[in-house]
Length: 169
Image 1 (spheres, rainbow, N blue to C red):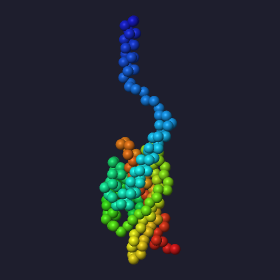
Image 2 (spheres, one colour; image 1 turned 30 degrees about the vertical axis):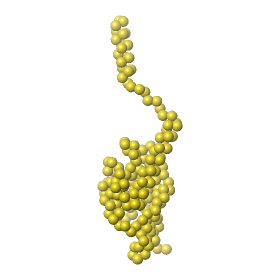
Image 3 (cartoon, one colour; image 1 turned 90 degrees about the vertical axis):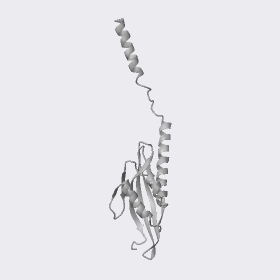
Image 4 (cartoon, one colour; image 1 turned 60 degrees about the horizontal axis):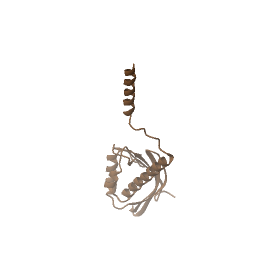
């Protein structure tokens, strides 16, 4: 009987040792620090995306696309683009035109632990379109997702026109 109790004690001791360290829950301060870091990384990625677009920098834009190829581009009066490859092809073509510029302002955002969205006021401008300057004031919503590598990637770009220079008055 003593042998059995001794054997049982050894088995239970061995089983308890193989579980590894117990993780303690994060403190409120640790959670707040993680949330602040996520918010900062989200906004840095979005600003980098907006700058790459304004600078017509296709190589930087490629680094901000989701590694699994997931992407939706929705623009007025054009078919929806469903992959990062098609998004890049669209932008490569657009970036070939040197006669446009954009100004952007991030107006709102909501960032979660692995998904966030932002609303951007964007003004698209061409110095000449049909003999006159052209502009298009738009609202663009962006959705970014944090992947397993801890980085944020743009997965949705949805724009809508608010006011154009060609609108009838």
